[in-house]
Amino acid sequence: QVQLQESGPGLVKPSETLSLTCTVSGGSISSYYWSWIRQPPGKGLEWIGYIYYSGSTNYNPSLKSRVTISVDTSKNQFSLKLSSVTAADTAVYYCARGLPSVVRGVMGIYFDYWGQGTLVTVSS
Amino acid sequence: EIVMTQSPATLSVSPGERATLSCRASQSVSSNLAWYQQKPGQAPRLLIYGASTRATGIPARFSGSGSGTEFTLTISSLQSEDFAVYYCQQYNNWPPLYTFGQGTKLEIK
Image (tube, rainbow over all chains, first blue to last red; front, side, top):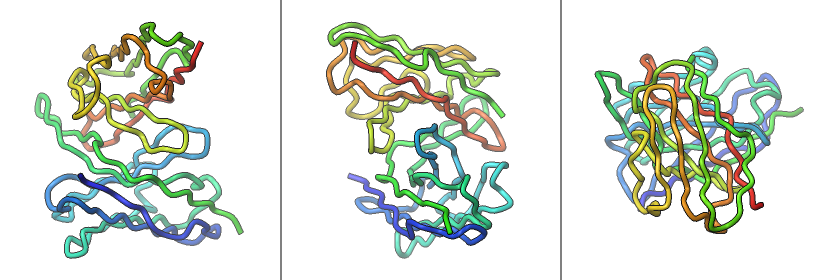
């Protein structure tokens, strides 16, 4: 059974960088697409970006200038860095495994395993 | 950006009855649509992908249908554990910008 676990600071100051790590257990990080998704308190879900185990990435254009996702296959981990945070970045951050689907030449991913989520609050 | 609109925002249904949740895309997403269930304090759980394929371990009372811009999640004979928030997600664009609906809260009537 694949399990994902987020870790990192629960409080980040405005203008600083949010850093989270997701540890994957019960399966290899090789293959699949590994994503970060966030959910502001009481609101809906926002896809942040993904990394393929080989290192290729894609990000939500609205966050692209501030986001970096990296992978460490030797540790079965992938990480998120979000720079210049503001209160609007306060959210529960989830890591998730993405499965690819190709329909009529368009590849997309949906998410079959999720971490439990970690609340990150941006406040001074 | 493809905007996903779910209706209704809240649905009140009695246990044992059928629930029908809708999701509309602002442009065609073919069959690249997934449904998730989220209970308070928990991560979302994948129910349906490819618009109509149940994920592993999902009971048969959950079914998905639709293609293009109109999708439906049907839960036949609601059980107590089914009361939750349901989200749809499209994954049909390149470069990728996967978007979720705002959610439908399914509550006990």
